[in-house]
Image (tube, rainbow, N blue to C red; front, side, top):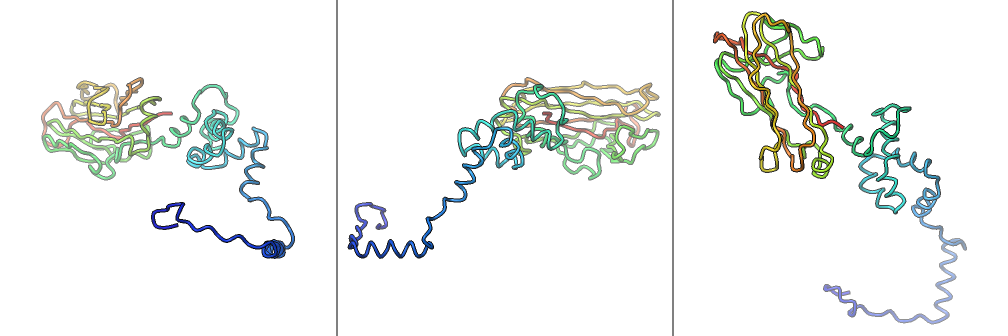
Length: 298
């Protein structure tokens, strides 16, 4: 074949004589020990798996990585495609990996594959929510008054954070509004377009705030779901929440909101919170915040 790959330019081999053909045949048999060449091992294995009863084949497939199931196994044949796209395989994987109880009801969900992938990705999408890395990961930071400061729990005139022993620090605001934000790229975090546009999994935002016993303060939370071009598709705003000194709540207060049925097109989550004190004292007497979180729920 020449460089252009023209089939007409390929020379035809000369036909061998009957004697030469017989010698080649005999030589081939000797090379193979007089035995026929075995079938391709991969084809034999595929045929063997294809003969397995469905419950047993499901258990074999459930041992494979999820990405391999979706990207390779469902392309093998129609039967495997139906098994990979079906609910029983993903329910089995969820049970094997402890995402649901082994003896739990099997008909609570229609989309076990989506539940599996969402469960495996489930984590707090906010970085540095408790100030362990100072202000690293936060953007659009507004340092009103004396600005933000990270303090150790419980802090002056404060209380311990009893809701999670791993939380050791918080952000303290000052005598003018202090604000900070994070923008989460959902696709970069592993959530693909079809999932976001069709399934529209619940997006849960949470924050914890507190005041000091010796000074009242204000707190505010704003969360926006944004499109690819950062158009606002859904929004939650707490309004300015007043926390009086010596509040009866006496500690950390949780605020949360769940976005559902928000429509197609969501690609980013913008989380912003802030606070200030009500007495205009120099220092850090404003609202305290910690353990902020954004979750995409299965």
